[in-house]
Image (cartoon, rainbow, N blue to C red; front, side):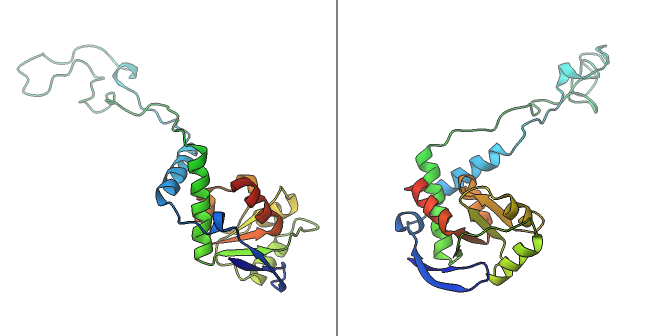
Length: 208
């Protein structure tokens, strides 16, 4: 599959680049995508949730009612879970939500996500570019020239570029990522991928 190369003015340079079929042309594996996205979302969780159990409630331990004959549930003290203000039974505790996922599964998931974007014609390749200074106006003009300003663009760069990142930081729904930070969730969450030529070459080196 070949796609045209544009410049940041939205002009067709007349050149074409081939998208690697082993990355952008595979049969997507939905289950691999599910696992990779699930792991990414799980890793975003702080896991600091906590509720107090019976032994952690600050209250009197005096027995507040007779053991039998009251007509209701047994309750030993004010910290009983059956009373308002009592401890919680089996409440959440701090935990780590991380789980292991094999590298080959993660690679398959990323290839599947990129293949979905290729199938939907949601990939645009641009010449390598940079901005002389951080300026939101320059980034907005580029997205308008490429006709992706309303499509939740994800711009992928081969390496960190502070001026481009700062220029896009204040643009709603736009995102800039370096190739090492590209993952399945970010690819699927974007409306369109804007890849620089160097980033496209780097993808081939990483995923093949």
